[in-house]
Length: 201
Image (cartoon, rainbow, N blue to C red; front, side, top):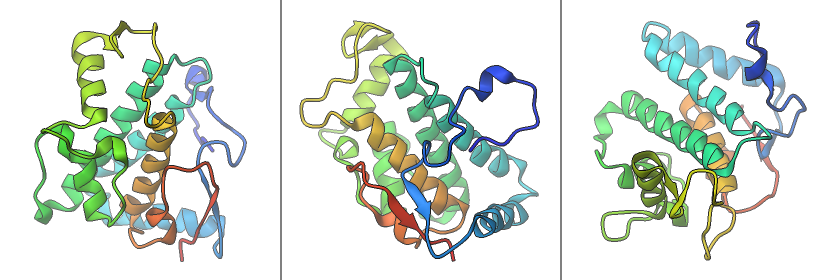
């Protein structure tokens, strides 16, 4: 749930009911365990304000992607921005792991670091991925599935839930980046609407 003391009301048009933003529920742990995880992340990285701001930015962008009147390309753009921020944070936390420069390899690289299965739409094929092609045309050509922005939905004949899977992947990356990469939830598949248990202990 969004917790803020700001008066930017237009940014608060996001889910406020538990269970609407993520595909997990806390199991064998409590809300205080979740707060403790966030606090531990802050304590570890507070001297590097960029890392703290990035995790907040990822979560906030995930909130913005849930805005109910977003057009599909807007939702895609927010989700891709959140994934890109996950990459930047992963790169800064795991500096010893090297990192790819091309967008096409970034999601697979993060999934490898956290021992997660890479979604089909992020698998490399001839130096590109499904998601990197969509990203490049959206960001650089103002075309979303060959149509001007706003005139098309995400069109994938193999999988009609890519945006939902992007949300699920971001949620798992947030838990991993906060300091629980071995958490059972992080390893769960993203290609389902199932609610998963998340044990943060």
